Length: 173
Image 1 (spheres, rainbow, N blue to C red):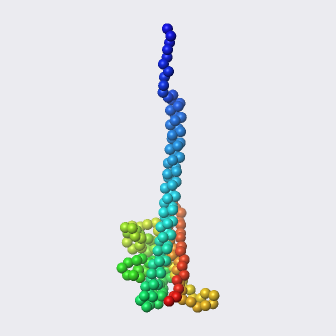
Image 2 (cartoon, rainbow, N blue to C red):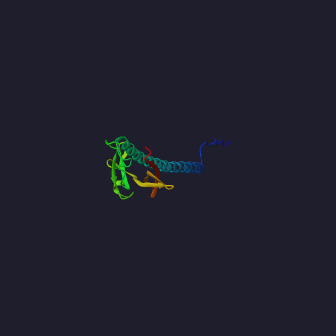
């Protein structure tokens, strides 16, 4: 008699395909954002480490100068190499080694535990050198001083980046 059809509940194939497409595009956006954030994170991390390594190089040279004062030596004793690397060790003045430039194997920075150095550990993407120039005269006045430049270089995503820190150290004692 009466043909009663029950209303069928469920989704049509077209509705399911549209839902899957919307979810897929949403997830693609989320994954792209995650990958982009990872790249930015690593870039910022390497900039921070490079800057810190550069500042550490300056502090190590300053430590040599201060140790020379305590020993009664000339303030620039041991700092006569134009380009070198410097590390801390059991000697308070550190370990100073001559290098030819930032691309020298001796300039490569290694990671041993939580500490960076030039001698032991796993290779990193960083290289560091210290360059010292004598300051003989400023404005016609003779002075004893050093211009210390700490260069750090690293390569990330096929882009070579550098950071340098410059400080002037004087024999003001």
